[in-house]
Structures are given as C-alpha cells and as structure tokens.
Image (cartoon, rainbow, N blue to C red; front, top):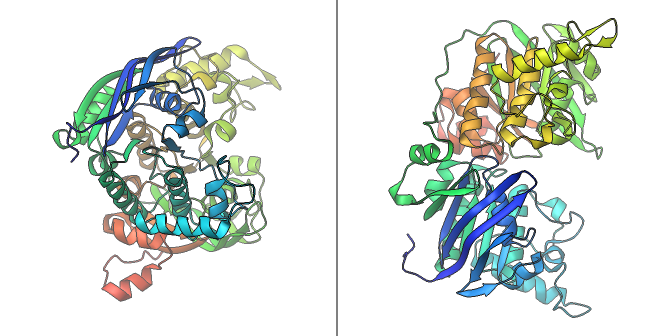
Length: 522
C-alpha cells in the first residue's frame, strides 16, 4: 500500500472541460503520488476519458491547472505530455503491425541519430523487458504477437521513452486471466521504482486487486475518493450509479428445449484470406446460453458473422431448427430468426446520425405497422419507438435524438431493443457489455437472461469470464479458430478457462490434473 505522505507527482486542480451542450468535467481535482496506482471509476459518460485526454494533450481544459512535481505545466499536445513523463496505453493499441517491436518503440522519437543503431536499441529493450518482466522479442514483427504481448510492447514503449506516469485504459479487456495477473506484477515492479499509474476500468475485481486508491466520477464531477483497502465493490458501484448493483444475477432454472442452432465442422477465412474457423461444431438449444470465451482475434467475430449471414463458410454446415441455412444472406438469416448484436456499436450496430427511432426500426421497417403498401408510416414509427424506449429504459431526450449523442450504455440498449424485438429464435450477442459501467452491464445481462427464460437460444461471445460463468449455461473456448473444449458453467474454473484460452485442450488438462469438469457432449 502506498504511503499517502509520499510526494505528489501529479496534481490536476479545478479541471473543467465543456463541449456544446455538455460539461464533461466540472471542477475536478486529482492527485497522484509517487509509486501509487489510482483507479478511475465512473459510468459511461462520467468524464473519465475526457480527463485523461486532457492529461495526455488530446484536449485542452477550459479552466483549471495541472502540476507535475509541484511545477505548473501547460500541456498542449501529446509531445508536451510525453516530455513531462506522461504516457497512455490506449484500449486500441497504437502499433504498426508490419514493423518490429523495436521499430515501434522508437517510432517518432526525435532525439535519435538519422540511422539508429538497431542492435543497441534491441539490446536496451531486452534489458528493460527483463527488468519489468515484460517478456517480448524486440526483433519480431507486431503482427506475430498475441494481444497480451502487444500490450507489453505499448508499456515498454512508454518506459523506454522515460514515462513516470502511465495511464491504462481498460487494461485487461483483451487479456487472459494469466496475462492480467502478469500485468499486476508489472505494476508492482514499476511502483517500487516510484513510477505511478492511473487506470480506467469497469471491473471491480481489478480495482480491488490493482489499485491503492479509487476516484469516482459522476456526471463530470468528482463524487468520492477512497483508499482501496477501506472500501468494497458494492460501495464503489453504489457511488457510481447511485443504487445497489447485483454482481451475481439469479439465473432462473430453465429446461433447454430442441436444438435451435447447430454448426457442423464449419471452416471459414478472415478478411485477409487466412483460416479463422477450423472445424467448429456446436449446438445451442432453446432456453440456453452458450458462452464463447477466448482472447480477441481467435475467430469469435467470424463465428458471429457466419451465423448471421455476413460471412460464408468455406466448408461445413449451419442449421437453424434442423433446416440447412448455409450461405444464406443476412436477410435470409433474419427471416430464419437470427438477431445479431455486433461488437462495433457505432460502426455496425447503429447509424450515429440517424434518430433513435430510425435505428429502432431497422429490422422491422418492411413490416406492418411500420410500413404499409411499401410506404413508411412516420406516426407508427414514433409510437413504436416510444414503446421500445420505455420498455428498455433507454435514456434519450426524445425518440428523434440522434444516436451518436447517447451514452455507450444507451446506444447498447437501443441495439438490444431492436434485436430482441426482432429475434425469432436465435440471439447472437458479441461483447454486449464491453466498455459499459456496472449499472448498464447489469441491465444488459438481465435482458439476456430474460430472453433465455423466454425460450430463445443465445450465443454469447465475451472476454469477461465472470460474465460467462454467471449467465451462460455452457462455455466453449476458442483458440486460433478451434474449440478447445466445452464446459458446464457451474463446473468452470477461471484458471482452467484461462489455460484453454492460451491453447490448452480440455482433455489434456483433464488428463494432467484429473480435472472433473466434464466436457459436455450433445
């Protein structure tokens, strides 16, 4: 635990940032001590990212001051921030895939010779990687690395450039449990050297295990600061959303019905023409949630696209309620009863410049009562949208408000409302609660459980193992497009799932340890 009497390395005083019609940060104060890990919590739209973007020079504050080691500083650009020893690891990594680790780490550095000594640079990177337990080969290309290794490169890049303050945005969103533990060990080594970190997260277990102190933002204002050792997940959730949040949801006992979706030996390629799915076979029954675990990039997106008609398999078959629908178009899959909640909310799930009402009717505009005789009926659209907004508790000023002005949680509720209303048997949900605060996450998970109780078959793709173990009935693990095994959720062990996500087959783990978690056989 950090000594709170230690030196203050960073202080933000009275930070205010306004956008048209919105006060994103309202007189926010932040202190960070030497060797401290500070967690930044808040609902979607609370102002966390804005505050950090000010600190790394992407925005300028309208009011307030920033001090680094008691000196007033002006941060007008990311270079100013870097010169002050502040760096940020973004959720979407800023790396060039075709360049090596060493080339990425020095890219953009201005104090290097015209022809840098790459052997010497690689040696320095190796020394740093050993010192901070960030194991990575400086001479391999980024595209050859796993997601966890790429994150290590991002952290090494900041340390190599002299960063004393690291900002981590959702740092474990794409990591296995083992990689998350490794990140925690890295932070411990860094803080022993008086480096400090601020991380944005929605995962309470990360807050409790990673941080020394927690700041809670609500509607752009600082509402609470707590020592991590003196608080609890329940208190922090209450401070964030203003009410108690259930972290473990009650899952109603449902007897699964007939097989509603079946894949038989499906193979498919990704957009680069490389194998993405390799011999995938699975079944989902009515009233059942099948979870898909795996580190991002192991075939999850392609699996969802094959089922929703967005990608044709190279071989194998897809059956819906016993009918072969292989190679059906997206419209054909919709008519067959498939609904799809995509991972990309703004790029694929909604049209940001269109109204909430218009986004809600995207699946039903061909049908009565929304249209009649090929003509759209505006009054019916508004009536329908108002019912959906009320039913799904979408927080929007009006049904005519453009979707891009909603918070992340309410954009997701808009997609859920549309897809659930259109669902006629199968719901494919891809990372449905990723990036959402605890309140919105609870609402999304409850909606999925309601669909399960109503007899729908649900394919739930998620990187959150707690989400999968709490609401899925069975969990399949994907690694490099292959299913490593399928486990009943009540038998699931987080460590075992993590090993499977890293490429270990369930049968191998069972043989090695006498594991009793039986593989489910249909």
